Structures are given as structure tokens and as C-alpha cells.
Length: 537
Image 1 (cartoon, rainbow, N blue to C red):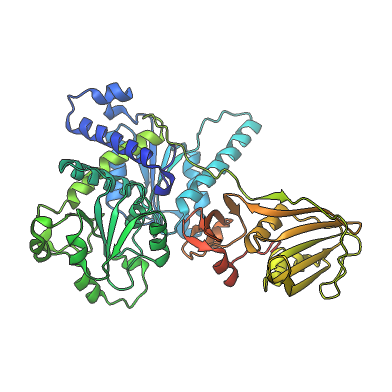
Image 2: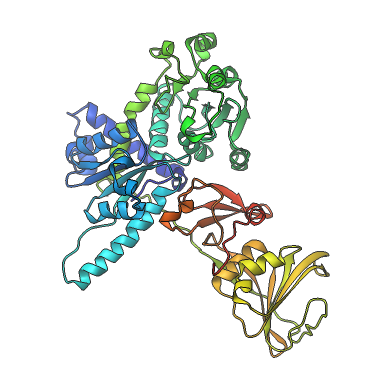
């Protein structure tokens, strides 16, 4: 394992391995006479990160995540530096994040812990660091000077509304400890996810692994703070049992073993929210817990509690025996030592960062039965000698497709025919005929496969069809669709980042999940909202 960017990157086995290491760290800290840690991992805990330098690069305020990572590095024998907000950097002067992160890599830091307001910035950071390291290595070689800096590991300390993996892992570690004390395991636990489900990255992270542990999720929230329909659909498609209680917090609590409360993310929502109503609906107080009696769940919260505005956990709950928020927070130290040790190779790990197996679009040839075909339909135009026919385009999409392919900008001779009867499929279709000895590029293949996945492409040479094929999408696609999420790092203009999406099949539909911010989109919505990137623009 080199990076910790998203909980979606880990399998159940890998998560349990991290929790096991965290347990070993905790025992070593609280029982110094026990030598089992050094025997198992080859180093004393206090020397685990000896020679390792960590940079905590926080573009957003943080208490627990920032200082627990700093404490983790020092307690395990490493060194740490960085900045607490972007106000302390040249980002305020207009510098790009790419240049900021690359500077720390060039100084030889081994790990960058990154927190940002833009979703997807940590994964983009890894790409930046990889390219920067390659360039530096080439330049040092050209100038005949030594170079030993490695590509730093990246740990996501929270990126906007997207993910907070180290928090999720310490939450799971805490849940596991509580469950085992009561004769249970993580599998099959009843969890209440409360308050700001829509904007909270800690809840988003837990939801992304709910299927791995067969969690039963019980939602309760104020109006407009509930889970998005897309998030609920994804959970149910993965087999997660979801119950939605709307504003009825007491009902959700009564069905849960652990209640995971959260702070309303007022910094991520618009102005004019009814804060008093949100506070009244979402506050957990002693009266509610006393009314639940022995059935009251253990209460967790990622902290901080907004005591000024919402007081989502009231002061009379501070010392309640079921309130485990401080216990939960303290577990951040052990989990983060484990993550630093595994990312730097000081603790062995079989966890590999996963990349898509197939990028872009492949061609699937269709057997030709009649090579010569008269393509002189006066309605759709004709090709006398050479050209390409893109057939079976969904009705009404031919003109937009031609634009996306860059044919308009290139001024390619073409004929676009729309709403033609399709004898093969029994419905209307569009058709694009390109005249001349034209070759479609891989980028154009990607666009056709997204907009017209059932299209066939006929290559005409000397009035005969010499090749006929369909297109098959791979596991990911680059540069063809702008991310739907305005908060995604790919929509920050000064960084100049090309969008990338994973391809996910959902029945007959194709879903697009941004590789950076992980927000899911559909091809239909991307087409309707004109988010396709026009080739050559």
C-alpha cells in the first residue's frame, strides 16, 4: 500500500488488515513492556518511522486529523512539517496546487497528508507527484547529478464532500472494538447515520464500505440534508439494507447498535438555511437517550461538535456512558500510525493501489457478408468512392455527435441524416456519412461509444465496405466528459486537469464515476447538459 485516498480502493480483507495493525500499535503504546510489536514488524514502535518525513498540507482548518497525524509521525520516530491552511502558502498569490505539492516532493518528503475543499484533489496530487518525479529524474540525469527522491505517498485527510478514509478507518476500528466487547463483529451491525448525510464526507466514506460488512443503515436527517437518491440507489444495488426515517431521529436510534452522528456542514451549504429547525430536529440530548433505556446505541461523532450553532450533541450528553466520541477520537492516533507505517513500507502490506485494467475503447469487428453496398440514398446523401458511415445513432443525436467528434470544426465533408427508419432495430435512428479518406481517432471512438453505444461503423473504400465494426468501452475513459460536480478539482480552471471517468454498467445504462471526486453521473445527463468535451476545442 502506497496511498490512502478513498475507501473505495480497499477490499474488506485489506480494511481488516489495517485494523489489525492499528490494534498492534495501540497495544504497543499502552503496554511498553510487551515486545510483540517489534518481533512482528522488526522495529520498536518509537523507531518505526525513523528517517521518514511527513508533510501535513491542510488547505482547510482541522484539529483532530492534522494534529493526530503530526503526533503519529513524531511518536513513531519520524519528523513532520507543513501548513495548517492555505493562508500560509503562495496559493494566496495565485500559485497552482500542482506547483505547491511538487515543491514538497522535491524537498524529499516521504508522505503528504492532504486536506482540501475541492473533491478529488488527493488523487490528482498523486498524478502530479508521479509526473514531477519523472521530470526531476530526467533533468538530474541530463545534468549528471545524483537524484534519490522517491514519489511521496499521499494520504487523503478529507476532500470536500467526498471522502475521509483515515477517519473512516478509525471509525471502523472503534466500532470493531465496541462490537467485540459485546460478543459481536463488524458484520451485520445496525448503524444509524444521522444529521448531515448529504454533505458529510465521513458518512460518505462509511456508506462506501457498508456493503463489505453487511451493515444495516438507518437514516435520519433534517430536510435537505438527507442522502441523495443516487447514493441510496447505489447502496441498494450493492445489497445494503437501508431504512429511511426522515426527521424521526428517535426511531432510527431505537433500531441501532451504534449511532453515527454528524455536524451539519454549514460551510458546504447555501445561505439562508433554517438553523434553528436543523438544531431542533438533529440534536441528541440526555432526554432522548434516557427514553431509550438499555436499547440506546453507542454514540459516535467524527467531531468537532458545533456547540455555537447546532449543539448536535447537547452538553448534558458529555459524560453519558454511551457517548464514545472521545474514545473514538483517541483511536485516530493508532490508525494513523498504522497508515504511515504501511504507506512507507515499514509495516509489510499486500495492499496494492488499483488501476483500471482497460482504458478507452476497443474495436469489435463485424463479419462482412456483402462487401459492396450502394450508399446512394438521396435522403441520407451518398458516398461514391471513400468514406465512413456511422450508423444506428440514437434518433436526434447525430448532429451533436458530429460536433463532439470535431467534424464541424474540421470542416469535414459530411451528411447528417436524422430520424430515419431502422429496419434492423425497428425504430428511428440517425446516421452520419463522412466523405473522403477519413480515419477516426481513438478519442472519436470514445465519444461514439459513449453517445451511441450501439452504433456500427462502416469503412468505405472504392464504393465497397472494407471494414465494419462496433465499439466497446473499457473500464475508464479520459477527457471526454466534464465532471458534473462543480466542486471537483477538474473544474478548477487554473489547475488545467483533464477529466477522467470510470465506466460502470447499470442495466442498459452507462454510468460515469469521476476518478477524482467519485461523483456518479450518467451519459444521458452529460448529453442533455452538454458536458461532452468537443474534440479539438
